[in-house]
Amino acid sequence: MTYEPIWGPIIAWYLFLAGLGGGAFVTSVFIRFRHPECTRLIRTGRIIAPAVVIIGLCLLMFDAHAGFMHPLRFALLLTNFGSVMTWGVVFLAAFVVLALVALLLDLLKKPVWQWLDIAGMVMGLCVAIYTGCLLGVCQGFPLWNNALLPVLFLVSAVSTGMAAVLLAGVFVAPEEFNAVVSLKKFHFWLPVVEIALVMALLFITASNPSPAGWNSVMTLLCGDWAVAFWVLFIAVGLVIPIALECWMLWIATPAVEESRTGQMISGFSDLGVLVGGFVLRLMIVSAALPITIVQPWIF
Image (cartoon, rainbow, N blue to C red; front, side, top):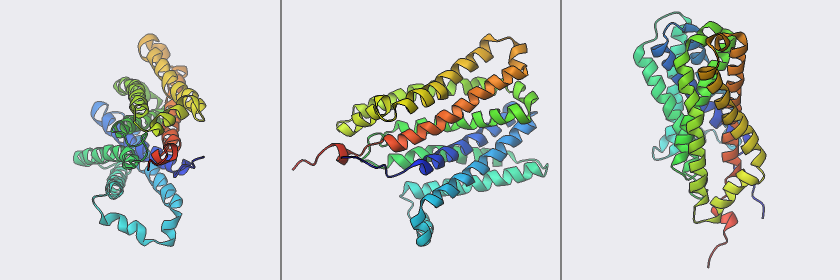
């Protein structure tokens, strides 16, 4: 018996873009407090954050085609505060509003209130965590119903958000890109943490009493998703960026690190992080098997 996933690539893009947007705003706040002179990088984060989240929301509404035939379904999402989806709508709406206000003030060259940045950062983190909780409420899927999944998506969201800002910085603000050393060092450790979280998630899922957990993990490690897991996620998304940034930050000379070649190498590693971040969500969405598919009913 074959199983068709209930969600597809569009939902994976939505989860990826929502997390990336929250992470990009967190990055802009980080730069503001650690490197306030890097104004172009701060603005870059403020532009990326609401833009990608809005794109993700448009994809979500496109995927929910039934909602267009019954528009009240969208409004009813705000009536059940016991639902993760309702809280997700609240977090997303608040985040988009705060991010757009901060961007507008920045573009108008007016000071962005500190409380606005902090509130936007909190909402951005809530959005990143929500993307994992959204899947976690599906108790029939061992790969999703795991307390580590929201933590993994949070770490990945901050990592991809920082990667997006740094990658853009290579082209729009190369001098400021060289100056944000503390951001690069913090970003270096996120893929390391991500590897540990992924391994723990897979171990816990495989230990689930239902065969569905084991089969989901095997689908990733040596099944249909093995190439994506080992090549695009582990190698391109984690190991290569870790190796490149380790060399650039602690082995290469400052002259090499700040050269155009060094910037492009760092940009390549950031691109790899973005690829890995999307592939992670696509695999989690697509490889999860429900208990009832792989375990017959016991009468």
